[in-house]
Length: 110
Length: 114
Image (tube, rainbow over all chains, first blue to last red; front, side, top):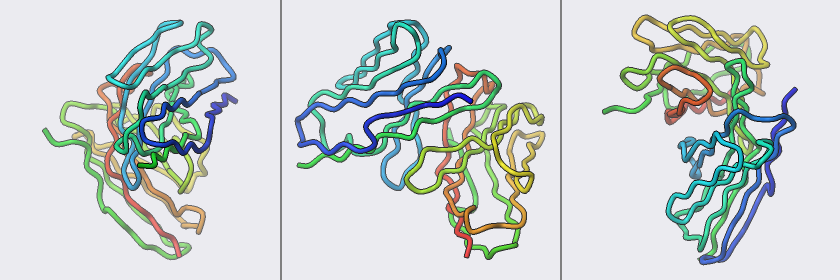
């Protein structure tokens, strides 16, 4: 079946440092979504990528979809304590089943 | 506008019991999906319902069932509870449930099975 690997599993950074998480699929994707889940909270939609090589920015967050549409990345520039949480990529397997990645837990040290 | 609501917030059950969890989607949304999130893991897809019909099902045993009502609210039922069913159960609503739809998650129901 379709697999979604997300790395790293954990990342501790000093406030102000950059952070990147990667999402890799075993199959070509039609689209990919990114979610953020704060500790004790629920996943919140961040963005969706659809086109090959697409790059989207949200303030300090940059999202990229690979040329082959098999991988994606989320990069945060100059992390802040408000960035703390777990970042998930999510994809649709094509039959109304949604697969979430294992997530990357980000901790920002002030 | 109200977001996705779920009830109850927390629930404690014992092995062998059954449980019913409830979800009300965002007004105007016709699709509801259910997820199980075990501590430290990503959400695992259980069901998707659209217009009262099951449209997708994850790899969960038949002890798990769900339904959607005419007002698009939904219930998730779990029978013969096991310790391993302890998790956060999340409901997500979307307009049509298509792959490009944004899913809006509710706060979840924390189920503890003793």
